[in-house]
Structure formats: structure tokens, C-alpha cells
Amino acid sequence: MADLQLAENRAPTVAQAGVWLACIECEETFAPFAEVIYRCGECGGLLEARYDHYPDFTEFSGRGVWRYAAALPFETGVSLPEGDTPLHEVPGLCAELDLPALRVKHEGMNPTGSFKDRGMTVGVEVAKAVGVSRLACASTGNTSAALAAYGARAGLETLVLLPTGKVAAGKLAQAALHGARVLEVEDNFDTCLDIVSDLADRDEAYLLNSLNPFRLEGQKTIGFEIVERFLDDYGTLPDRICLPVGNAGNTAALYKAFRELVESGAIEAKEMPKLTGIQTEGAAPLVEAIENGSEAITRWGSVETKATAIRIGNPVNAPKALPGIRETGGTAISVSDEAVTNAQRALAEEGIGVEPASAASLAGLRKLREQGIVSSDERVVCLTTGHLLKDPAAAASAGSDPEPVAGDTESVLEHLAE
Ligand code: F0G
Image (cartoon, rainbow, N blue to C red; front, side, top):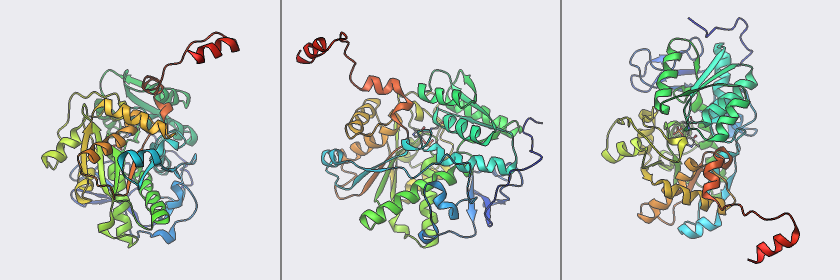
């Protein structure tokens, strides 16, 4: 090896007692921080973090992701800080969809503008705990922006592999300014992830894609926030959560949040919101698996969509996400790029600025309402995962054109009167 050095002086990271990793396929268990491990050493299955105690709401205090420290592997992490995102009321959309209890949780309000920050605050802390020096990810953009920022904050080297020409300008700019080494690969995201996984297996870098189970620990706090807010506002949980799906990490993370709340006795199993995954028609392998009733997804070799954040043909977290969708009684559907743009405009009319992938959640909900699958009395949360400014080109083309005018008041008045 190995550029992935174990630092001489490990950071004073305080791990919670009673946390370990378990394989979701064969239940083999592993110590979490003694070695770097991403998949089961026995069968290659995905790993998840397990705890000897699952807290209920009384054990949470403070704000943001680390409010939920009692359910996380550390007491605190590399924080910018993140979480505590708004749960918007959307009166116009409630009226349009005849869905009075629709809310939009805008994860674009995290420090680097996407939900990935929740995963990185935990994931980069784990990197410090295991003592690695170089962090890496493959990305459609947002993960790289978050990794670059959190890596910078932790003083660690960051390496990101991106598909050439398919990453929105805002995300590229973030990775560049926060000092990541950016490699553009003449292939799609899935190939980038294959390469980064190889690098990680060769101990060349610490992998911070959502294959890393600790990323999902941070992201599960979205579920905790939704539950706490809904209990405060409505005295009950939402019936359904609609979210865009790429690698299916977030779907897996939400399912884990609800399972843990059931485990702690904070909620009942039948209360778990129906997880509803939305993809675009050009990149819908998870939808295909749900429609076919398959246990596993079939990788799509070629994918295309304007929602570049979810331009993914091989959702690596599908073995965690498919059971989440099925066991909560949810579903998965695909929407056209045009429907995504229309939903992006509709959210903008409510004052909520999102990038295209985020708008897929609303586009999917609209379709499910049209099909009668979602009824008017359902309480629904649409998750909008990334900020409008992530993809300025998409926002500009979905919005109105600027009007050139001469630089004096009379010209402006004349122009306005036209
Ligand atoms: N929405 C946005 C804005 C995203 O950036 C992503 C994933 C998703 C939804 C899908 O989430 O992968 O957990 O199903 N973006 C990753 C990235 C792949 O590299 O930024 P998922």
C-alpha cells in the first residue's frame, strides 16, 4: 500500500459504546473502527450500523444532525453545522393537488446545499476515528461538494471522480473551491463508483459514498426530524414520504430511521411512512425492480436525464432500499424530464428553489395523485434534496429570460409599458 496511511496520532474522537457493523445478508458482525471495511468480509453483502440501545425521543436534545447523537456512532462530528432543515407549508400545491396535509422538507438548506452534508458530518468523523488521510467518492455532484467541504474542515485530502460533462456547474465549483482533487472520467457515475470502490479496496482512499454505512447513519436524521415535526404539528406521522432515488442510499437511511424508532418503542411498525421512490424515465432501474417484483435490480448500462444528480444505472443500496419500499407499503415510479421541470417551476412558485432531481419527488407525487394511488387525506412529505443554485443552467432554462433594456428610467418605463 498504500497512500491510505493510518495517522500516528488519531484524533480524539469519542465513539459511543455499543455500536458495531452487521451484514444485512448473512448477519456476520464486525468491529466498526478497528479496520476499514465497507462490505461483509464473509459474503460481500452491504453493512449497516447496529447499536445495543435504540433511543426514543426523550433522549434527543439540541439541534441539527447531532441532536440525534444518542442514535449515532459518535457524540459529535465534523460539523458545519447541518440538518434542522425547513419543513415548508405549500398552500398552492396543497390546493392544486387537493392534498391539504402536504409538506416539503427542503434539504437544499444544508450547508453545502444538499442532504449529503448529514452523511458527511458522520462519515468524515469515522474517517478521523479510523485514522485515514485521503477521502474519496464518486459523485453526480452533490456528494463531491459535501465531501470537499467536510474534508477541508477536517484538514483531510479529498479526491472526487465525476462523470465528464454531467455534473452541474454549482457542484463542480464547490468541489473545486473547497480544494478537492477533481478527476473527470469519460464515463457515467456507475463506472466512477466502480473505480473508487477499487481504490478503496486497495487502501488508496477512504470511501465516502453511501456504500459506507456511516454515511447513512447521518442521513437517517432526516427521518427523525420529519417524525418529530409531524408529531408536534399534527400529533401523528406522515403517511408517505416521496423522495428522488439515485443510489438509493437516502431511501435506505429513512427506512433505517423508522425501524430504529420502532425498535425503541417510539413509534409503531404500522405507523412507518410509505417510502415512495421517484426516478426519471431515463434512469429507472429501481422502479423496474419494484414493478417486476424482483429481489435485485438489473444495472442499466446507459442512462440519461436532465436530473443529473440521479443519473444512475446501478443503485448500490438497492438491497437496503427495496425492502424499505415494500415493507412500508410504498412504491416507486418514474417521471419524464418534462414533468421534473414543471415540478421545479411549481416549487419555485411557492418560493422553494430546488435542483431538478429534487423536483422529481413532487413530479412523482403529482403522477400518483393523478393515478389515484395517493388519496386526498394522506399526509405527505416531499423531500427536496438539493438547492436551486446547484444547477444554475437548469434553473435558468426552466425560468423566464432576462429582458435587455437601455440604462435610463424612461427606457425602463417604456419597456414595461410594452
Ligand atoms: N437528490 C439529489 C440532489 C442527489 O444529489 C442525489 C444523489 C439524490 C437525490 C439521490 O439520493 O443516491 O441516496 O438515492 N446524489 C449522489 C451524488 C449520487 O453523487 O451526489 P440517493
